Length: 106
Length: 154
Image (tube, rainbow over all chains, first blue to last red; front, side):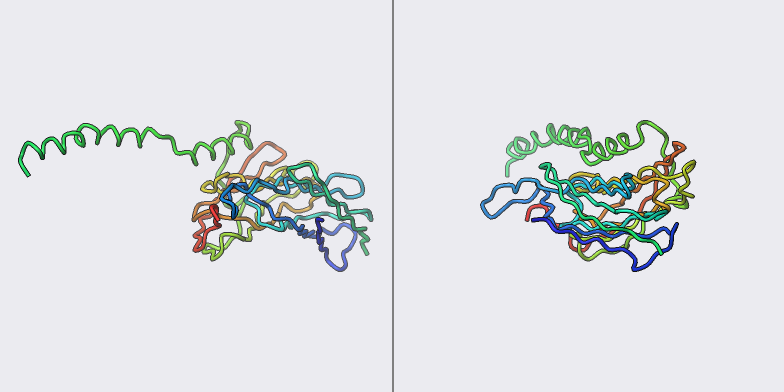
């Protein structure tokens, strides 16, 4: 089961640009590695992270095998209203999982 | 060794030597080919301007562990609806696959700045590109030495 941790500043004002950091649990198997049985371990990576805020796409990252295991990313977001922040990771087998956090500027 | 035997043994080298050398030169550098393809896919034929003052790669010049290298890419942009960075690309040309990550941003980002952690197969010069909404593409480079490279084989 995939797990993800999303971190935000404790408080932020309306209109402030914040940095969202997110880490998902995933092996990010490159497809270049040989396993104990001498065979290539098949590639299995998270290939996309998309972030929607209040229903609007605000950030997207296309990941490659070069991204570390348990991919970590930091990206900016201008919080111009209250709304739901939704991060969706999708792997190269079409499996997706989501983490949602309500944003409430003060 | 008789003179005749010496001639017999070295003659093939004299003939094949230059040919072998030529075949090595004619071999296209696979990494260069992959890098050009990645640059072309990002720029779609638009000119790329080297501009370290418009785009920067923040990374340690000496990295101990190639399995997890922190990097931050920062572009100069007001990030308004009229003038903003749309895409940022990080390339590690000497990795098996040059593309590390492609980031899509917009005016709602507020800042043109992203950070991640990635793997480096060997010491190399990293390349970052930023595509602005007006069509301009800027390029920055950073040379990084890796003491312990990310293991590809195991």
